[in-house]
Image (cartoon, rainbow, N blue to C red; front, side):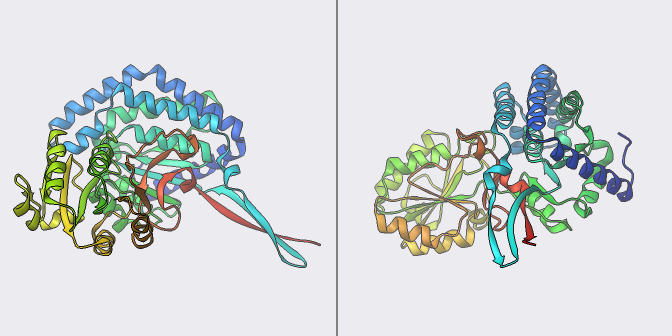
Length: 418
């Protein structure tokens, strides 16, 4: 592909991505399944090349002062890569997701009926840092839904990304589908390419994925619709009736969503009726699991070994194995705190009292609530239709899991009766 040098060049290329996406949609579900299988096969064939390129990216990143959390995301293990290939194969077997969202028709008047037709958005863009497998997952989602895709990965993953994109393009060519339904903006085009992307009216949706600084920057600068993702900063309310073992299991397991613990419980709101002894036992268990444990002023004075949390910690994700405890008077105070300072994408409750469960679900505004269960995030869960790129707190297009449905919309059809 010719190197892009201006916004006008970029606009023309995006139009070709949109046209190729239309061709992908017209090809039908069976051809889309074929290209997904071909993508998995092509990537499997170059697994060693991908891992070698990833090693080179890691070595280069160590000299670039890349943050440690991004380095952790960047390190692509064989297990992570194979799990990604399994996702492609499951997408291939899933069939047309539009059929799962068919909208029933209705009669508007004596001469007019209506129904909804589920259609792809058109052109979707992914801006991400670290996590090179996200390019594969989003490509799979777009192949399955019939969308064109523009990808801008972080420079730290440039060599890994290059090998991956070459394999995906070979799969499209192998199945006689237009390779330009996937557009990768390279490191050579620099930061200007991201600016063009954020201002391009031909893009129907941008999904940024990474640290809050990246996501917030995209939201601020974009002139097109954005679906912001969220990582970490999940909140847990430990009610007086909640069992200690349940709290420990929920917190520890939520941080096991490697490499990016999307639904990690990082803030634990402890009911005033919970004893200092139980709290100390919880902290000791977390220390044994390698966590850093912080607390508010009251709890630091109450529990030996707690470090004092900074005021800025409460509203920001740690993105490490760190949790912060805070005392609250009752459930309503916990709900108000979560709604003000929480991530908005996930919150949890540990309680054995039914009316507390009901009040918590009525008062907390987070997209997904977990009750006495670990909120650990899985991109490739048992139900293939529930596969997800990440999570979002944004209401509207989708709320919670960012999966196939986020890339689809409903076209209303009105038909006269003659």
